[in-house]
Length: 417
Image: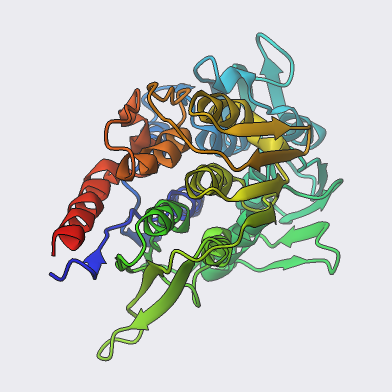
């Protein structure tokens, strides 16, 4: 294989995988799900759903998997039985109140056993007869997606009104796309505040083969690698820009400002098979301004890449990044400042001033896979940089370090040739 045309194997999307797993369970397993993500979160959800289906336990532990916990909480709330749901210390600090309050307003019986609005909870499963509900989506789009996914179970479907602008809105669009692909009717008002999900049709699509897309969030780290290694051409088979339902495909748009060009390639024999090829020219904008409200998972990668390239950054839409697996804003600021970067923050904005990095201290990943991967990319430029707890990456990109090693060897061969 040519060193300037390196093929990188991305994981499939855990966001899509998790939605299809919930919907498949609710529908009675009519769908054939292919290429499910092997990330920790998806494997965990598969395990918990299997336990629920087989009735082997009524206690469910979600570790630090926010999506899994929110989707499962909503599913258990409409599943007859007595249930408990819990997670690790960080998950117990993350917000659940808007989802719990909405489910309670529909008649679901949920008790917070330690702190109101947080895990752990006990649940008495009940299928609501109400069709209408309101929800505050400002802290997480997962609240909305969780509700939409159980909509088909309700006798009259669900009409869900958002009381505020949703964070990460493309993930709600993804959920609606999954429902539609399964044959379940959805609609949204022109102002994107009212979502409607119909009940299951008389006959659900059976034996429908679902191929899970490659993951655009994971692709962002390959874009970052390309930005740091000008001239190296990296190809990501199975990834599409034109046909993807994932909001994080804006990665291509953002990294264009950082010198990385994108080309979508179609197979001449099987047009449905596509790949994305990226390459950096080393010419980038001196200042990057971007609002990450709809794509918060991309911010760590973009910020660390800007720091490495000496690009001034003014990044908005950061509020919900404090509510992830770690407080990502403080984690990024702390680790970058250890390297000599100049980072300032307000409640809604993060600013990076150009500085020469000196990354000699080990990187604390703060128990967060995206912090580990964002800083892991720096090892391409600073090979002696130590990333603590590198196994955090298995939460979303199990082969991250393997793929990074392939890139590192290809870059070395390019220099030597």
